[in-house]
Image (cartoon, rainbow, N blue to C red; front, top):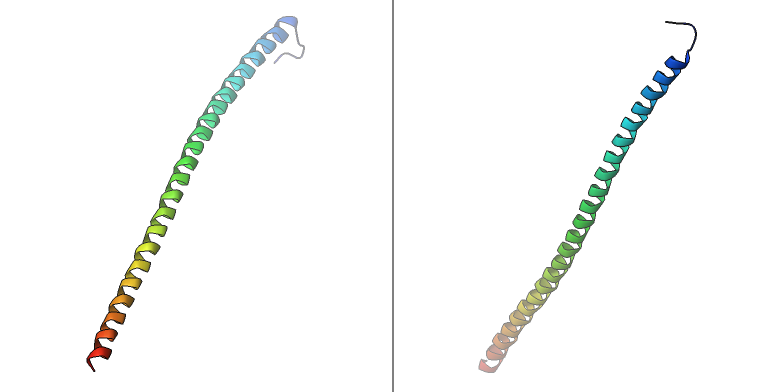
Amino acid sequence: MRSTWTDSRLDDFAAHTDKRFDAVDRRFDQVDRELRAMREEIGGVRGEIAGVRSEVGALQRTMIQVGGGLIAAVLGVLVATLGVLVTQL
């Protein structure tokens, strides 16, 4: 290795350094594009999760209504049966 830096060596070093920084810039641009794509996908997933939550809420309301209706029907049958028993005795 030479002990002195000449103008041509400095020019070669500068050109090589510029190429390396250009490569780093391209990599960062690619990472930036990938992160933006991931953010868009995450936003879509969040929207889908919100939709599933609303569907689960609707299912819970339906199950409560059906359960309440069944309890009311069983109590109605029980009251009718007791009414028949009481009037027949």
